[in-house]
Amino acid sequence: MNQFASTSAAASTSSILSVLHGRAALRPDDVGFTFTDYDRDPAGVRESLTWSQLARRTQNLAAELRRHGDVGDRALILAPQGLEYILAFLGSLQAGLVAVPLPLPHRGSGHDRVGAVLADTAPAVVLTTSAAADDVGDFVAQAGSGVTIVEVDGVDLDAAVDTDRLPVDLPSLAYLQYSSGSTRAPTGVMVSHRNLTVNFDQLMRGFFGQTTLSPDTTLVSWLPFYHDMGLVLGVCAPILCGYRAELMSPVAFLERPARWMRALAQNPHAWSSAPNFAFDLAARKISDEDLAGLDLGGVLGIISGAERVEPATLHRFVDRFAHFNFADHMMRPAYGLAEATVYVAAGTWDENAPAGYFDAAELSAGRVRPCPPGRGGAAGTVTKLVRYRVPQSPLLRIVDEATLRESPPDRVGEIWVHGENVADGYWGKPTSDGGFGATLAEPSPGTPAGPWLRTGDLGFLHDGELFIVGRIKDVLIIRGRNYYPEDIEATVQAISAGRVAAISVPVDGTEELVAVVELKKPPTLDDETRARLAAIRGEVTAAVANAHGLSVADLVLVPAGAIPTTTSGKIRRAACIEQYRRREFDRLDADAE
Image 1 (cartoon, one colour):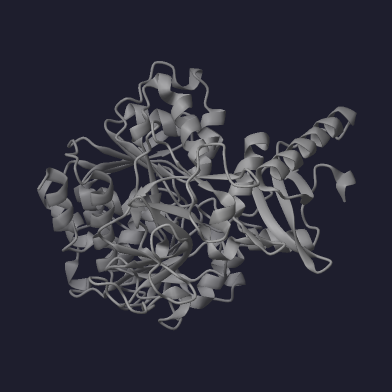
Image 2: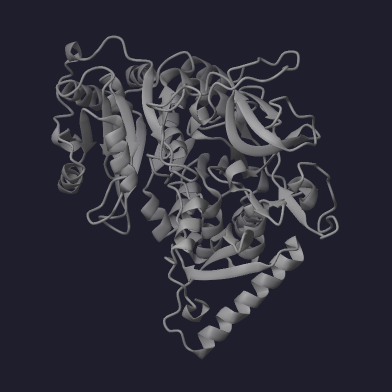
């Protein structure tokens, strides 16, 4: 067993807290987390915590929280991205409370999602910071809750630890990971300590099972801590694997994507993760001058997950940074979901065999037919899909939605997952709600009948590899045929370069295709701008017709940021449909109304 495998196997038999205190005992002065704050200074203000500082402050915060809640009570985290957020999460766990990580509600914003979670969980305490306390207090009061608010930085975190006030036996439930609501109202996935450590072990074996990691490996992340990938890879993974984390906020990345790439180059053996849109943004916005004198050749890998991974995006990213020694194998596409903690399957990008090419019309009918690049069926439509290795743990099967039997290779079906990484269900919901606890009909030898998690994602197995097609609920049915919105969006993005949402809306009793396209907002709507927007309209409608055999009933051109998304950047297509029906999109070409 290699160095990593032995480390992760030990972690999977312990809780994240016992691993933390073990690191504090054995390596007290080693830095565990460094957060760079770009809000206070554009050049960045760095703050670090050693393992011993982190363990001591976690215990002191837990002792304070025990004054306000009992074991099993919920603790909402409404704090800015930073070290205090990490302490709030760990302190809640240490106190035996169930942590509920959420985005910080800002004054004047709606944040219906946070209010819904506040009502759903009935927390005993809300954790924040002194800088955000007034806004959080006002928000909690408006929500009609009298819950206690604790300012993390207002507690004496470096006092002598009073372990007598801490629970000896922790509950099995660690935290509630609330969905970001891409297809339904937010629901809290109940993630146990066991789910977390088992899935971390599966994740690391999937990515680095044959690799001996260097002791100075660094985990670089800007992902929000309230998102499943940001929480597990930015907060939990550094503790469970013992490698230092180099962190910044999502806003810091969005303001200057070069900060992310510079951090990858400046930290040894960097490992990171991001959703698909971030790679597009980085490739477009980062100049050679931003990375002058830097070398990306030491990057261990970057996980692309949280939304469907597009082959064109991976190719564009690798090509853009190749002359800084970024290599294709550093790109690590991943598939997962919060209901399985975070990780299910992984792959490795290879420019020599970059994607699988399949006849889109056949895929729409549930059949898999490979085809050469650029050549599809009668309509000439080709779907390009990223390859993933079929995991041994967790177990994965492709299942026919109607019969609940395993589908043969080369048939599209629903992806089902089984393993100790799968959560028990949603907070306050029946066990079977949302696809938990499913049972296979007539399982094949060696395949358990249940319980299985129905992911709601469509995929298939081909030549021993896994391919992800899209969400069942997002499939567009137009004139009796199925279309995957991601395919149409990829066609449009090749022209617009911005975010796109492909939706279907009822018109005179039939479903029609509508594409919402984000563009940079022009300063004025003069004749030159109108001509440019008209040209984009013509190019997009022609491309969609040629590639998919579809006519675009309406092309809605909107400013950047107008398309509603989840916390991980996934398009909320149901919300797009509602906004379109209500005529709530601010069209760049007002004459299109």
